[in-house]
Length: 114
Length: 113
Image (cartoon, rainbow over all chains, first blue to last red; front, top):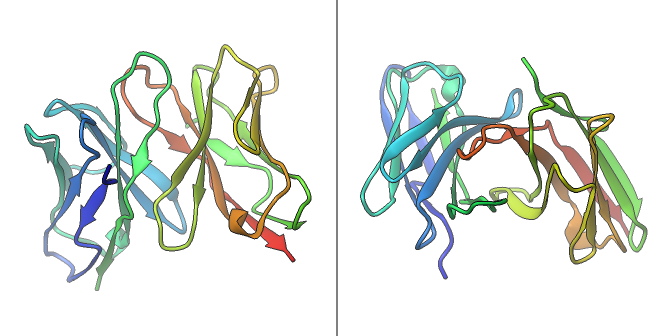
């Protein structure tokens, strides 16, 4: 079974631009979460989608947004990029189970803002 | 705000020895905890999880211990191998049905030959 895939793997943007990152979850997984990873702040939760609905959102400004499509693929968008948005953006998918769950992470998209 | 933190940023162990990585959490409402391993250039990889109604869970070469009294989580790796060298994160979930994890700052484990 294929793992979580993220595209693109690397991206360089200029301040003020916007960017869209894509995530394809493992087949059958309906929950997709996004995280930002930086050396200073570590791994921080951005938002989580399930069945095309955002169920939870972390403490990030409104410049960060996302969506999920009917095939569970998800995109996140960052508008008006700032230097501090440079980070590894990770997507994780999981099954919706009643008990514990395993989140499977993709390799991430490395975003550099200059 | 409440957060998950790690006691030690780095840990070096001899190949074949056991490793213990510690984690302190502060959110008493958290009911689910996970350990992840992250190798350079890769996303975090699930290792083992534990629910708050348990105090110990074992996997292949790994054991997670949960002490809710002192809000402490540990990961024990038996017979540590060079391939275990990575950054290890603990994470907690207090969000209920949603998948929102709060991660610790990570511990760099280095296995010495």
